[in-house]
Length: 63
Image (tube, rainbow, N blue to C red):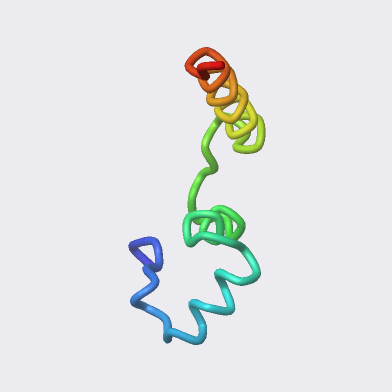
């Protein structure tokens, strides 16, 4: 195979099963070893983002 499989290469039911098990399409490709995962840990990145949003919310809240 010369390229990474696309969702359009599969039937709707196959895509649904794949996404239900692995999550978003890029995560499925990473799990299959067809795509390299992003360097930064996603959970840590999301946690950091949520914390920054909370901090901004505290700054802008009017009492």
